[in-house]
Image 1 (cartoon, rainbow, N blue to C red):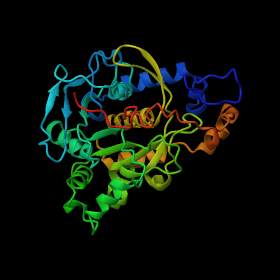
Image 2 (cartoon, helix red, strand yellow; image 1 turned 135 degrees about the horizontal axis):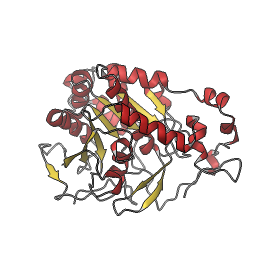
Image 3 (spheres, rainbow, N blue to C red; image 1 turned 30 degrees about the vertical axis):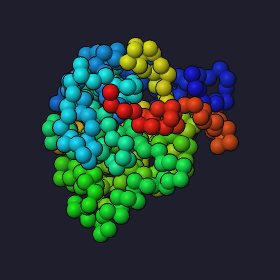
Image 4 (cartoon, rainbow, N blue to C red; image 1 turned 120 degrees about the vertical axis):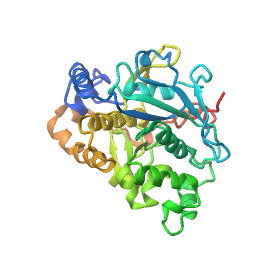
Length: 349
Protein backbone atom coordinates (compact mmCIF):
# COMPACT_ATOMS: atom_id res chain seq x y z
CA UNK A 1 0.00 0.00 0.00
CA UNK A 2 1.59 3.24 -1.16
CA UNK A 3 0.24 5.71 1.34
CA UNK A 4 1.40 9.31 1.18
CA UNK A 5 3.34 10.88 4.02
CA UNK A 6 1.01 12.38 6.61
CA UNK A 7 1.68 14.40 9.73
CA UNK A 8 0.12 12.06 12.29
CA UNK A 9 1.47 8.55 11.94
CA UNK A 10 -1.86 7.19 13.18
CA UNK A 11 -3.70 8.79 10.29
CA UNK A 12 -4.59 6.55 7.36
CA UNK A 13 -5.62 7.09 3.78
CA UNK A 14 -9.26 6.97 4.86
CA UNK A 15 -8.86 10.40 6.46
CA UNK A 16 -8.30 11.90 3.02
CA UNK A 17 -11.97 11.47 2.19
CA UNK A 18 -12.76 13.88 5.00
CA UNK A 19 -9.89 16.16 4.08
CA UNK A 20 -10.93 16.67 0.47
CA UNK A 21 -14.71 16.18 0.64
CA UNK A 22 -15.52 17.25 4.19
CA UNK A 23 -17.28 13.91 4.71
CA UNK A 24 -16.38 10.63 6.37
CA UNK A 25 -16.00 7.61 4.11
CA UNK A 26 -19.44 6.39 5.17
CA UNK A 27 -21.02 9.78 4.52
CA UNK A 28 -19.29 10.05 1.15
CA UNK A 29 -20.43 6.57 0.10
CA UNK A 30 -23.99 7.40 1.17
CA UNK A 31 -23.95 10.64 -0.80
CA UNK A 32 -22.71 8.90 -3.94
CA UNK A 33 -25.41 6.25 -3.58
CA UNK A 34 -28.05 8.96 -3.22
CA UNK A 35 -26.83 10.73 -6.35
CA UNK A 36 -26.65 7.50 -8.34
CA UNK A 37 -30.16 6.54 -7.21
CA UNK A 38 -31.79 9.94 -7.71
CA UNK A 39 -30.19 11.01 -11.01
CA UNK A 40 -31.14 8.90 -14.03
CA UNK A 41 -28.03 8.15 -16.09
CA UNK A 42 -29.33 4.95 -17.69
CA UNK A 43 -29.84 6.70 -21.04
CA UNK A 44 -26.25 7.96 -21.11
CA UNK A 45 -23.14 6.30 -22.50
CA UNK A 46 -19.48 6.73 -21.63
CA UNK A 47 -16.43 5.89 -23.71
CA UNK A 48 -13.53 4.48 -21.68
CA UNK A 49 -10.44 4.80 -23.87
CA UNK A 50 -7.91 2.42 -22.41
CA UNK A 51 -7.02 -1.29 -22.39
CA UNK A 52 -10.43 -2.94 -22.84
CA UNK A 53 -13.29 -4.18 -20.64
CA UNK A 54 -13.38 -7.56 -18.92
CA UNK A 55 -17.03 -8.25 -17.97
CA UNK A 56 -16.11 -10.79 -15.27
CA UNK A 57 -14.34 -8.17 -13.19
CA UNK A 58 -16.23 -8.22 -9.84
CA UNK A 59 -16.73 -4.45 -9.91
CA UNK A 60 -18.53 -4.68 -13.27
CA UNK A 61 -20.96 -7.42 -12.29
CA UNK A 62 -24.42 -6.05 -13.11
CA UNK A 63 -23.08 -2.90 -14.78
CA UNK A 64 -24.45 -1.71 -18.12
CA UNK A 65 -21.89 -2.91 -20.68
CA UNK A 66 -21.97 -2.49 -24.45
CA UNK A 67 -20.83 -6.08 -25.06
CA UNK A 68 -17.86 -5.23 -27.29
CA UNK A 69 -14.40 -3.67 -27.26
CA UNK A 70 -13.51 -1.45 -30.21
CA UNK A 71 -10.01 -2.49 -31.32
CA UNK A 72 -7.33 -0.72 -33.39
CA UNK A 73 -8.20 2.59 -35.00
CA UNK A 74 -4.76 3.15 -36.50
CA UNK A 75 -4.33 5.02 -39.77
CA UNK A 76 -4.21 1.75 -41.71
CA UNK A 77 -7.33 0.33 -40.05
CA UNK A 78 -10.97 1.06 -40.90
CA UNK A 79 -11.76 1.51 -37.19
CA UNK A 80 -14.64 -0.93 -37.47
CA UNK A 81 -13.27 -3.84 -35.46
CA UNK A 82 -15.77 -4.35 -32.63
CA UNK A 83 -14.82 -7.56 -30.82
CA UNK A 84 -17.14 -9.30 -28.38
CA UNK A 85 -15.84 -9.81 -24.85
CA UNK A 86 -15.48 -13.51 -25.65
CA UNK A 87 -13.16 -12.66 -28.55
CA UNK A 88 -10.86 -10.37 -26.63
CA UNK A 89 -9.55 -10.42 -23.06
CA UNK A 90 -7.64 -7.29 -21.97
CA UNK A 91 -3.94 -7.60 -21.21
CA UNK A 92 -4.44 -5.73 -17.92
CA UNK A 93 -7.16 -4.52 -15.54
CA UNK A 94 -6.68 -0.78 -15.99
CA UNK A 95 -9.72 -0.13 -18.20
CA UNK A 96 -12.01 -2.25 -16.04
CA UNK A 97 -10.91 -0.35 -12.93
CA UNK A 98 -11.59 3.04 -14.51
CA UNK A 99 -14.93 1.87 -15.90
CA UNK A 100 -15.89 0.56 -12.46
CA UNK A 101 -15.31 3.96 -10.84
CA UNK A 102 -17.45 5.63 -13.47
CA UNK A 103 -20.30 3.15 -13.85
CA UNK A 104 -19.55 -0.10 -12.03
CA UNK A 105 -21.86 -1.82 -9.56
CA UNK A 106 -20.40 0.40 -6.83
CA UNK A 107 -19.55 3.25 -9.20
CA UNK A 108 -20.89 6.75 -9.62
CA UNK A 109 -23.48 6.24 -12.39
CA UNK A 110 -25.55 3.71 -14.34
CA UNK A 111 -24.29 4.80 -17.77
CA UNK A 112 -23.57 2.22 -20.47
CA UNK A 113 -19.84 1.53 -20.81
CA UNK A 114 -18.18 1.44 -24.24
CA UNK A 115 -14.45 0.68 -24.49
CA UNK A 116 -11.56 1.09 -26.89
CA UNK A 117 -8.25 -0.78 -26.81
CA UNK A 118 -5.27 0.76 -28.58
CA UNK A 119 -3.49 -1.54 -31.02
CA UNK A 120 -1.35 1.12 -32.68
CA UNK A 121 2.15 2.14 -31.58
CA UNK A 122 2.55 5.14 -33.87
CA UNK A 123 1.79 7.72 -31.16
CA UNK A 124 -0.39 9.53 -33.69
CA UNK A 125 -3.47 9.77 -31.49
CA UNK A 126 -5.63 6.97 -32.86
CA UNK A 127 -7.59 7.16 -29.60
CA UNK A 128 -9.23 10.33 -30.92
CA UNK A 129 -10.25 8.51 -34.09
CA UNK A 130 -11.72 5.77 -31.90
CA UNK A 131 -13.76 8.29 -29.92
CA UNK A 132 -15.28 9.64 -33.11
CA UNK A 133 -16.12 6.08 -34.18
CA UNK A 134 -17.84 5.37 -30.84
CA UNK A 135 -19.78 8.60 -31.26
CA UNK A 136 -20.89 7.65 -34.77
CA UNK A 137 -21.84 4.06 -33.97
CA UNK A 138 -23.17 4.40 -30.41
CA UNK A 139 -23.79 8.10 -29.84
CA UNK A 140 -21.19 8.34 -27.05
CA UNK A 141 -20.51 11.96 -26.07
CA UNK A 142 -18.52 11.77 -22.82
CA UNK A 143 -15.10 10.12 -22.92
CA UNK A 144 -12.70 9.11 -20.16
CA UNK A 145 -9.05 9.22 -21.23
CA UNK A 146 -6.85 7.71 -18.52
CA UNK A 147 -3.99 7.20 -20.97
CA UNK A 148 -1.08 9.15 -22.39
CA UNK A 149 2.04 8.73 -24.47
CA UNK A 150 5.41 8.93 -22.71
CA UNK A 151 8.02 10.57 -24.95
CA UNK A 152 11.28 8.74 -25.55
CA UNK A 153 14.53 9.84 -23.91
CA UNK A 154 15.44 12.14 -26.81
CA UNK A 155 11.93 13.29 -27.66
CA UNK A 156 10.11 16.46 -26.68
CA UNK A 157 7.30 16.09 -24.14
CA UNK A 158 5.08 17.74 -26.71
CA UNK A 159 6.08 15.66 -29.73
CA UNK A 160 2.47 14.75 -30.51
CA UNK A 161 1.24 18.31 -30.05
CA UNK A 162 4.06 19.80 -32.12
CA UNK A 163 3.38 17.36 -34.95
CA UNK A 164 -0.33 18.17 -34.79
CA UNK A 165 0.42 21.90 -34.99
CA UNK A 166 2.82 21.32 -37.88
CA UNK A 167 0.05 19.64 -39.86
CA UNK A 168 -2.42 22.39 -38.92
CA UNK A 169 -0.40 25.50 -39.88
CA UNK A 170 -3.28 27.96 -40.03
CA UNK A 171 -5.11 26.66 -36.98
CA UNK A 172 -7.77 25.25 -39.31
CA UNK A 173 -8.44 22.10 -37.28
CA UNK A 174 -11.46 21.20 -39.38
CA UNK A 175 -9.23 20.70 -42.42
CA UNK A 176 -6.02 19.61 -40.70
CA UNK A 177 -3.76 17.18 -42.54
CA UNK A 178 -3.87 15.05 -39.39
CA UNK A 179 -7.02 12.85 -39.27
CA UNK A 180 -6.80 12.75 -35.47
CA UNK A 181 -6.99 16.55 -35.29
CA UNK A 182 -9.98 16.50 -37.63
CA UNK A 183 -11.57 13.90 -35.34
CA UNK A 184 -11.11 16.14 -32.30
CA UNK A 185 -12.67 19.05 -34.19
CA UNK A 186 -15.64 16.96 -35.27
CA UNK A 187 -16.18 15.60 -31.76
CA UNK A 188 -16.01 18.88 -29.86
CA UNK A 189 -17.37 21.37 -32.39
CA UNK A 190 -20.00 19.31 -34.23
CA UNK A 191 -20.83 16.33 -32.00
CA UNK A 192 -21.09 18.14 -28.64
CA UNK A 193 -18.60 15.71 -27.08
CA UNK A 194 -16.65 16.13 -23.84
CA UNK A 195 -13.13 14.68 -23.69
CA UNK A 196 -11.66 14.27 -20.19
CA UNK A 197 -7.95 13.49 -20.03
CA UNK A 198 -5.60 12.57 -17.16
CA UNK A 199 -2.67 14.95 -16.60
CA UNK A 200 -0.08 12.19 -16.14
CA UNK A 201 2.04 10.79 -13.33
CA UNK A 202 5.61 11.99 -13.79
CA UNK A 203 5.73 14.69 -11.05
CA UNK A 204 6.11 17.44 -13.66
CA UNK A 205 5.19 21.06 -13.01
CA UNK A 206 2.99 21.03 -16.11
CA UNK A 207 1.06 18.47 -18.07
CA UNK A 208 1.94 18.00 -21.74
CA UNK A 209 1.10 16.42 -25.09
CA UNK A 210 -2.50 15.44 -25.77
CA UNK A 211 -3.70 17.23 -22.61
CA UNK A 212 -2.88 20.52 -24.34
CA UNK A 213 -5.32 19.90 -27.21
CA UNK A 214 -6.98 23.35 -26.81
CA UNK A 215 -3.69 24.92 -27.95
CA UNK A 216 -4.58 23.65 -31.43
CA UNK A 217 -7.79 25.66 -31.45
CA UNK A 218 -9.22 27.74 -28.55
CA UNK A 219 -12.72 26.50 -29.38
CA UNK A 220 -11.66 23.08 -28.10
CA UNK A 221 -11.88 24.45 -24.55
CA UNK A 222 -15.65 24.06 -24.80
CA UNK A 223 -15.33 20.26 -24.79
CA UNK A 224 -12.02 19.37 -23.16
CA UNK A 225 -10.81 18.95 -19.56
CA UNK A 226 -7.49 17.86 -18.10
CA UNK A 227 -7.44 16.25 -14.66
CA UNK A 228 -4.65 16.26 -12.10
CA UNK A 229 -4.67 15.03 -8.51
CA UNK A 230 -3.57 16.79 -5.30
CA UNK A 231 0.00 15.79 -4.58
CA UNK A 232 -1.03 15.43 -0.94
CA UNK A 233 -3.04 12.49 -2.25
CA UNK A 234 -0.80 11.30 -5.09
CA UNK A 235 2.76 12.62 -5.04
CA UNK A 236 3.56 11.83 -8.68
CA UNK A 237 0.69 13.75 -10.31
CA UNK A 238 1.65 16.30 -12.95
CA UNK A 239 0.42 19.78 -12.19
CA UNK A 240 -2.03 21.43 -14.60
CA UNK A 241 0.59 24.00 -15.66
CA UNK A 242 -0.05 25.06 -19.27
CA UNK A 243 -3.53 23.52 -19.10
CA UNK A 244 -4.56 25.64 -16.10
CA UNK A 245 -7.63 27.19 -17.74
CA UNK A 246 -9.17 23.82 -18.64
CA UNK A 247 -7.88 21.70 -15.76
CA UNK A 248 -9.03 20.64 -12.31
CA UNK A 249 -7.91 18.09 -9.71
CA UNK A 250 -9.66 15.19 -8.00
CA UNK A 251 -8.56 12.74 -5.29
CA UNK A 252 -7.14 9.55 -6.75
CA UNK A 253 -6.95 7.12 -3.84
CA UNK A 254 -9.16 4.10 -4.49
CA UNK A 255 -9.66 0.40 -3.90
CA UNK A 256 -10.77 -1.78 -6.79
CA UNK A 257 -10.61 -5.36 -8.03
CA UNK A 258 -8.33 -6.51 -10.80
CA UNK A 259 -9.68 -8.85 -13.48
CA UNK A 260 -8.69 -11.89 -11.41
CA UNK A 261 -10.80 -10.71 -8.47
CA UNK A 262 -7.99 -9.42 -6.25
CA UNK A 263 -8.76 -6.26 -4.28
CA UNK A 264 -6.04 -3.66 -4.88
CA UNK A 265 -5.11 -0.25 -3.54
CA UNK A 266 -4.75 2.18 -6.42
CA UNK A 267 -3.62 5.74 -7.09
CA UNK A 268 -2.86 8.04 -10.01
CA UNK A 269 -4.38 10.69 -12.21
CA UNK A 270 -6.24 7.86 -13.96
CA UNK A 271 -8.77 7.23 -11.14
CA UNK A 272 -8.91 10.99 -10.53
CA UNK A 273 -9.96 11.41 -14.16
CA UNK A 274 -12.56 8.66 -13.83
CA UNK A 275 -14.12 10.53 -10.89
CA UNK A 276 -14.42 13.69 -12.95
CA UNK A 277 -15.96 11.68 -15.80
CA UNK A 278 -18.47 10.17 -13.38
CA UNK A 279 -19.31 13.65 -12.12
CA UNK A 280 -19.82 14.91 -15.68
CA UNK A 281 -22.29 12.09 -16.32
CA UNK A 282 -24.20 12.91 -13.14
CA UNK A 283 -24.45 16.57 -14.16
CA UNK A 284 -25.58 15.56 -17.66
CA UNK A 285 -28.16 13.20 -16.16
CA UNK A 286 -29.51 15.94 -13.89
CA UNK A 287 -29.50 18.58 -16.63
CA UNK A 288 -29.96 16.78 -19.99
CA UNK A 289 -30.14 20.09 -21.86
CA UNK A 290 -26.54 20.93 -21.07
CA UNK A 291 -24.07 21.10 -23.95
CA UNK A 292 -20.41 20.17 -23.61
CA UNK A 293 -19.44 23.76 -22.83
CA UNK A 294 -22.10 23.93 -20.08
CA UNK A 295 -20.67 20.78 -18.50
CA UNK A 296 -17.14 22.19 -18.66
CA UNK A 297 -18.22 25.51 -17.14
CA UNK A 298 -20.16 23.74 -14.38
CA UNK A 299 -17.30 21.44 -13.41
CA UNK A 300 -14.66 24.17 -13.45
CA UNK A 301 -16.77 26.77 -11.64
CA UNK A 302 -17.96 24.44 -8.87
CA UNK A 303 -14.55 22.89 -8.13
CA UNK A 304 -13.28 23.94 -4.70
CA UNK A 305 -10.17 26.02 -4.22
CA UNK A 306 -7.51 24.44 -2.00
CA UNK A 307 -7.40 27.56 0.18
CA UNK A 308 -11.12 27.12 0.84
CA UNK A 309 -10.56 23.48 1.77
CA UNK A 310 -7.88 24.50 4.26
CA UNK A 311 -10.15 27.09 5.87
CA UNK A 312 -13.04 24.64 6.14
CA UNK A 313 -11.20 21.56 7.30
CA UNK A 314 -8.42 21.74 9.85
CA UNK A 315 -7.55 18.10 9.17
CA UNK A 316 -6.09 19.18 5.85
CA UNK A 317 -3.37 21.13 7.67
CA UNK A 318 -1.99 17.90 9.17
CA UNK A 319 -0.88 16.69 5.76
CA UNK A 320 2.81 17.12 5.05
CA UNK A 321 3.52 17.92 1.38
CA UNK A 322 5.89 15.47 -0.26
CA UNK A 323 9.01 17.28 -1.45
CA UNK A 324 10.27 16.70 -4.97
CA UNK A 325 13.50 15.22 -3.58
CA UNK A 326 11.51 12.65 -1.60
CA UNK A 327 9.59 11.36 -4.60
CA UNK A 328 11.20 8.12 -5.74
CA UNK A 329 9.86 6.41 -8.84
CA UNK A 330 10.48 2.66 -8.93
CA UNK A 331 12.27 2.07 -12.26
CA UNK A 332 10.86 -1.46 -12.40
CA UNK A 333 7.29 -0.18 -12.40
CA UNK A 334 5.50 1.62 -15.23
CA UNK A 335 5.79 5.38 -14.99
CA UNK A 336 2.41 5.60 -16.62
CA UNK A 337 -0.45 3.30 -15.77
CA UNK A 338 -1.28 2.22 -19.27
CA UNK A 339 2.24 1.06 -20.10
CA UNK A 340 4.03 -2.17 -19.31
CA UNK A 341 7.29 -2.44 -17.38
CA UNK A 342 9.22 -1.45 -20.51
CA UNK A 343 7.19 1.70 -21.04
CA UNK A 344 5.28 0.27 -24.01
CA UNK A 345 1.55 0.57 -24.61
CA UNK A 346 -0.28 -2.77 -24.13
CA UNK A 347 -0.72 -4.76 -27.33
CA UNK A 348 -3.83 -6.45 -28.62
CA UNK A 349 -3.92 -10.22 -28.18
